[in-house]
Length: 327
Ligand SMILES: Cc1cc2nc3c(=O)[nH]c(=O)nc-3n(C[C@H](O)[C@H](O)[C@H](O)COP(=O)(O)OP(=O)(O)OC[C@H]3O[C@@H](n4cnc5c(N)ncnc54)[C@H](O)[C@@H]3O)c2cc1C
Image (cartoon, rainbow, N blue to C red):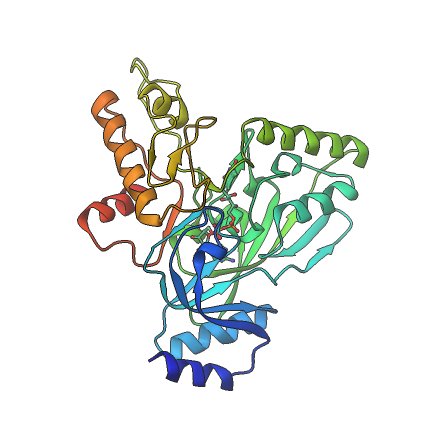
């Protein structure tokens, strides 16, 4: 099938880099995951649309990827087309607003806002990944969510339509948005600002937040950030008020490792791959172990924050991981 798809792909009018059997460990911050059959890095949103229409016409599945900082990819890889947004970085500044394409990295957007004295994004300075990925999962930190200054998002649907959604209609909540529940491609978005400060003051705030991350060990080893969401624990429970990391630490799991995948000593909600030798299956074993131990010891259900890509859902156990994430 791939050959036919490959030949047909060469005939469509796109500006894009196209790779075959591309190892996903090269494109994920956790440094694991098998090959993507067809890995496409488009250079324009019109090429994204062409690829989506091509995939629909040829019944090829399409998976979207930003910088891979919040995903765990199956060791079996990803079938069909994986569309990576790394070359979609156009950013346009206006008097009090910015339009940005999905593949722009977070620091580029924040720096652009700060240089113009736009206040409100400084806490996102140092957050790994693309703007598209952050909108998908409504990334949040230091009490703010990325949807806070967002005006609208343009989606390319699986049928190639371009639909503009206003932020107030996008159903943003904790690590979730309508975009993480439907299948469209997040193309570009618009942020507007109502507060302004001197750029020098905003730069200091950016550095403060970056240092906070550095001091918590965020940049030490390959990881996908926090693995588990903040659990909902009733008042009166022994774990009430604790973060997922604090509960994992209380369960005595800091430093626990399976074949190179390790619960970070410096941040118990991070699974790290320090030697880059762990495979996805090792990370999954560790996730299962943490969920079981925390559930057995404290009756707390830890849901995954990271997203699973590729055919991970082969076994009943892994399906449980998926459903916990989707709940
Ligand atoms: C050290 C570290 C610290 C982190 N700290 C935080 C934190 O404080 N808060 C937080 O919320 N997150 C945090 N994260 C997670 C991550 O940084 C964010 O979720 C980031 O926004 C993901 O962006 P990405 O481009 O890497 O997305 P990816 O990991 O590539 O993708 C994530 C999901 O979004 C989908 N997606 C990506 N782009 C598009 C698109 N254009 N259209 C449709 N779907 C798309 C993918 O299919 C996938 O399901 C951290 C990660 C690391 C490694």
